[in-house]
Length: 339
View 1 (cartoon, rainbow, N blue to C red):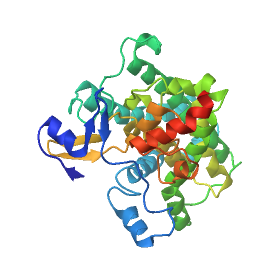
View 2 (spheres, one colour):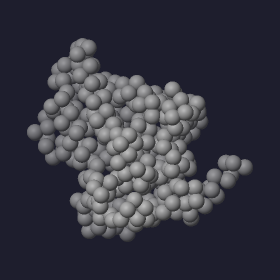
View 3 (cartoon, helix red, strand yellow):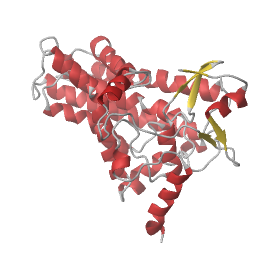
View 4 (cartoon, rainbow, N blue to C red):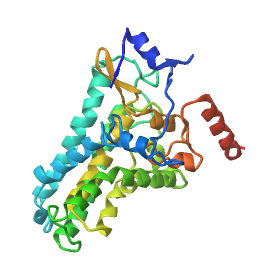
């Protein structure tokens, strides 16, 4: 959390500027934490893990806690998944729908309905389209909300129900969390690293044909993303995206692993697609939404396929830090494709 002063323009100018078309560009370049670098910097890495922002805070610990609460307090018992009844399915669907409604809806209400900070720190100068044939109902937000619930929450819940059905019917052996406490904690806290790797791999895949034309282009209609754009995907893409939960069936298994991974996947797109670099929590305080890297992906398409801890884009030459030099490098890289 950082201090921010002055009026609307003054606060924005403290962190960035706007180009001639009114697009906001942060001064701070996209970067990676001091973890997967050489030569190694173990002291800096440890400080980053426990700092704010860092590995745990502000986002990852929140998703882990929501996932654990979801399993231990607002889920049917595991045995209920053995012989699936409508009540069990409805509880899962309603719980996941409620999480999405509260979290995505909270960002949308504050930033786009109430417009609590107006367009301050908003990357794109325009608001989401309400009259475009690109979108269902000719409305970007309605299109995004429909895809989020009709496809996203349904497929998220389907993965959860299917995997827990396997566990409840003893096709997967379930460990006792108390007897395997260290293993349980480590697996839960490593969810974000696995999701980084998984997201990069499936994201690169769906940028190839025919997956892009069939599925991923639906998500990329949101060149000016808002919170609801985060899970606005074609069902095929949702199947790839939520398949992150399948990893846990090949390890000593606990239902919480799957719930935490799916909650992380289901909720984390909201701030990353907020469309704002910084979120105001008071007149003189803001925090970084960590949306810049993924906004650049929506703007330029062929960069920043992952935007987390693992520097995969840097390793594979698809990194864009928001600078003019990075934009030029991207243009040079794409010239052979366009020739």
